[in-house]
Length: 349
Ligand code: PMP
Image (tube, rainbow, N blue to C red; front, top):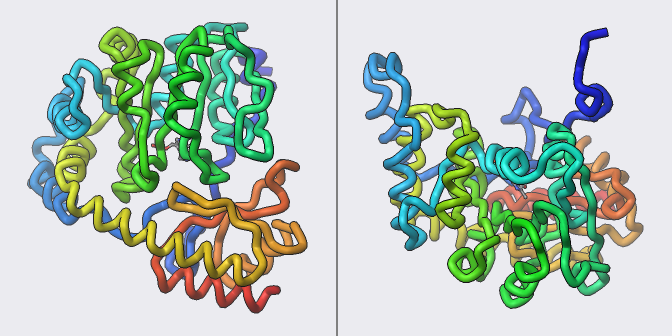
C-alpha cells in the first residue's frame, strides 16, 4: 500500500466527456466545443511567437501580463482585478485551495458542474449541494450560507437556463464566504455578472476561452475579482501556469471581438433552430443560453437515444445521475451537423 492521503485513496477521479481517437469520423456534440475555428489571428500569433522554436528555451512571462492587460481592457477593469489561468478549471481549483481548508465546506448547485466536488475532495474540503425547484430556482438556500465558497454555474450547465442578475446580487448577500459565478458559457447568453464584481466584495467571476473563443485545446481561462482575491490566487498558481504560445493565443483571440461576435451569433441562431426542431419531435427542451441544449425524449429514456446516436457516430453527453438520466446534453455544432442530428433523432423515434 502506498501512503496516500485517505481522501485521495477514497475519491473517484472526474470523468471528462469521451474524446474519440478517430475524431473525424464523428459528429462530436459531447463536450461543448465550438464547431468553428478560433480567430485566424490566433494561429498567426502562435506562429510568430514560435518562430524557429528558439524562444521556447526561455520561461514565459509569469503573470501573463499582455493577456491580463488585454482581458482587463476588454472587460473594463484594472489589470489588478484579472488573473489568467491554464483553463478555468485551474481557477476553480485554486479558489478552493485559497478559501477552503481541510474539513471546511464548499457548496454548489446540483445539477451543475460536478468537478467542483472533485476539486474539493482533493483538498479534503466538505461538499454540500443545493437542488433546484421546477422553476429553476435554488431550493432550500439558507438566509445566510456559512460555507467558504458557493459555486453558481451561470448559465447552468448542463441545463442551460440562467439566473437573473438581481437574484445573483441577492445571493451574494446571503453567502458569508465567496460567491463564484462560473460564466464558462456566458458569451452565449444575454447578460453577465461582471457589474457585481465591483458592487459585491465577495463575487468572483470565472471565464474560459474554451467555448466561445474555440480554444479548448489551448487551455485558457481567467477570473475577475477584487485585487485582494486576485493577489491570493496569484500566490498559489504555478508561477509559469501559461506557456508562451498560449499567452500569445490569449492576446490574439481576446483582441478579435468581431470574430467572437460572428461565431456566437451563428451558434445562437443554430441553437434556436435546433430547439424548434426538437420540439417538433416532441422533445422537452429547456430554453438554453449556452452552446448546448438539454433535451428530453418523449419516453424520457436518455440512454436509449444516446446509444442510438452513438451507433450513428453522433456523440452527445448522457449523465447517469437520476436527475439527468431522462435527457441528453447536446452541444450546438454547425447547422449541417445539427441537421444530421435532427434527421437521426427523427429516425430513432
Ligand atoms: N465550468 C463549466 C461549467 C464547464 O462546463 C467547464 C468545461 N468543462 C469548465 C468550467 C472548465 O473549462 P476550461 O477548464 O476548459 O476553461
